Length: 172
Image (cartoon, rainbow, N blue to C red; front, side, top):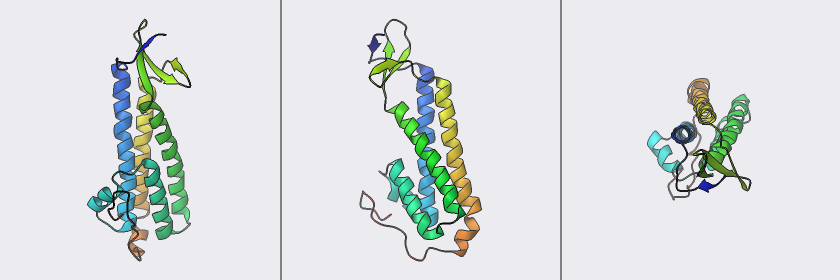
């Protein structure tokens, strides 16, 4: 294999990578909306407060706020299960999107650099499956927040603002 780095992966893989990137941003937005709901703040405040946050730090912040507001009950366990899946999906997303990609000179096929060697990458279908799983987990996070917890959170308002300063100095 003789890779060329100035050529992009084939269009199917690029499409799959784009779907993964967009769906991952939807997952991060789902966590941002948890900050909105648990912190009793507006959507705009939550978006502003979570800007520049990594997916990992968003998960940590939501868990901390959820534990403060909900305690160690079944809702937190459900949330932790979704966090575990989100963490794994983010790892897979990072593996795909932050990899070094090239194209084989001789075979005109896409290659990805992995563990010190050029290998055939996952397929467009693999990327589409990852994008679908990201979409599913984001929707499960929204459903848990909007349906299962809605009444409980109305009955149990935040006692005090659950925000702190974010990396960009905005209250969060």
